[in-house]
Length: 598
Image 1 (cartoon, rainbow, N blue to C red):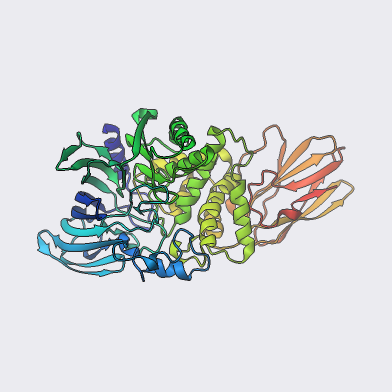
Image 2 (cartoon, rainbow, N blue to C red):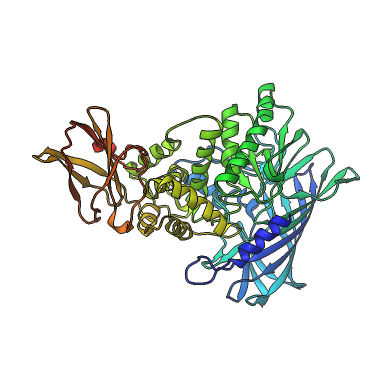
């Protein structure tokens, strides 16, 4: 815990990073909650105190709360969107529209005060709009107190009750959650089905539930649970998180496994699963410890002292110090979903981007690092562990249905476009950056990004600036074209002509997005030679990525010129083939003209 405190103090002391032209700041919200849960009615009563500190330079006259469970009601935005989008999520479709009053989800505020004064508020779908009794001045703190009633929905969309595998309660986004306010203003997005954003703070949660239920989730258990009148009361502390999640079931097995740096890995899974599934969950535990070490090494040290892998939900979803995953999977799938969701502890819960508007930094960066981890830990040994992401992105880019990565997560026209953009194109953004600046610089960039922005809310510009500092290269064009437009990469070999002094090669740029070019020449005797064409606007070059292969650095290529001509000198060896980017890390959307055989 002492190391965590020191890390937090260091992060805030270094608070001059990023966020446009102002010094860095972020709000703080410390939660205390007391929950009384009734497993017969699937309802609960809550009391919540939030100590809110306004670290912004602005005076706040209003605040907003998310009431996520209100999405699970007929006629909600989530319901209507699911019924009108062309490729509805099969887990939802029209099911919300058919929920009865006993099956819907809701959070009903009963009382809200600020420093003891009653507040006026209006519930608008999944958002509660609140007029303050007194403005919160810059640097000032205030205390909000709320009482509410809630019901857990039958429909499982991350959260809910009694999922397909019989897990009783998957309690995610289950409480009134104060919306984030940052340099862009309020982020009081309605819950339509995508992502989340939250305020950093310290949490204390007291939960009373039927004594037969086993509970796991965010935070550290304080003392021993106490049982009285048929209910067990748990108290959890969670320092410096921006969410709190829990799950409960009477049939949970609870195993622990020791991870690196004193981290306890917790596993909660149903004892009623078949024998093979139970065996898979046992074998998952040492693999999870390996994943923890991998992410510690390749991103940065996990600062908390526990992480929980919990059977629940409707697939896999990341939360603070925990994940909910469906558990009846083949072993490889079980490890894969754990790798992905665990990686989110870094690329989302410690590097807390606003995943509603930068969803690709969340899902894409996580997909990149979890694929790297699986390649090593599961012995996949793929030359390019991201080839699937490349195929997905190139399909989308050629489909006519791509939208830029700046699109809000809820505003994609179809689910397919969102999924490929956020996961696949986001992963390609990272892997392809390794092509641009070199793999060693990419590895250094990821680690420095974590060091500079852990416990903050970094933006795309923050990340690319770290890459610039590490590599010494200009990279604004890369973020602009690949991260903010649908411009595509398309280079080709247009012509090869023998000359008296060698072989003249003409390359063409068809796509709008610029890139530096690695070009590999293979000779008839099997030897190879590399030619590197720097991109002028990069103002520099990467190191030779092909050890043992001689590289010639050519004159740089300015983007506005659609063709580029150079000559391979006659060296007495006949050329067998010429290939643009043999690594396949450049996401060329039409690679058929990238190789010419002579």
